[in-house]
Image: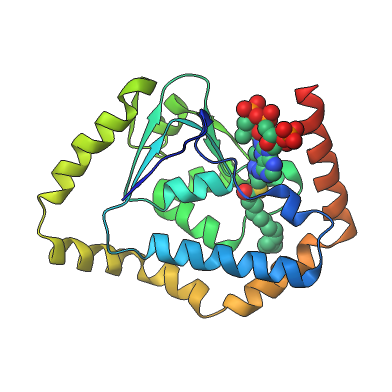
Length: 208
Ligand SMILES: CCCCC/C=C\CCCC/C=C/C(=O)SCCNC(=O)CCNC(=O)[C@H](O)C(C)(C)COP(=O)(O)OP(=O)(O)OC[C@H]1O[C@@H](n2cnc3c(N)ncnc32)[C@H](O)[C@@H]1OP(=O)(O)O
């Protein structure tokens, strides 16, 4: 399975910030449950999963990419990373766990505290992506890599993937409702809503 985007220049802009702003607790819980289930399915997928990152990939977009087995990113102006702290929010533990599994403890600690967004070359240097190529070569590179992975006996690959990812998946599975409730409570704090409001305004201002 290849994750790619139809939006030029944006692999994924992350979670819909407007869903987290001035929403109701019930809607926030439903929103979070949908995200949890999508991620559990992706990270726990038995399929070979590859990200064709042909544009920006902040926050939830970075989570999607990191949750794949292999990442190819376009060189140039695009950025990738978990930038939550810059929005005044905090990357949930399962976002953090996936990043830890991808780039290790030291790089994750720096990346998360700073809310760092990396260029493709920087992402390559810390192991956040596996390959950087010109934009037009992203999809052909992914397809070529996929052919390599498809040559591995499927049962052996799936058992290996499942065992490598089980602890992280089980950690969320065991506390889904608590995590959803925590998200709804956290996101509706006055200080967090204020930060999100300012961030949304800054996105709109950038456009004008
Ligand atoms: C203690 C533990 C606590 C646990 C739980 C607590 C907290 C929860 C944490 C939740 C985790 C959050 C994850 C996320 O994914 S948050 C979203 C982060 N995303 C971003 O920061 C990206 C913001 N967008 C951009 O930087 C840029 O839009 C861009 C993706 C680089 C693309 O730039 P460009 O091509 O120049 O497009 P525009 O900026 O003009 O954007 C076009 C329109 O799209 C709107 N937009 C963009 N991103 C989002 C988004 N994520 N959500 C909603 N809307 C978005 C943008 O405002 C423009 O709208 P307009 O056309 O109506 O003006």
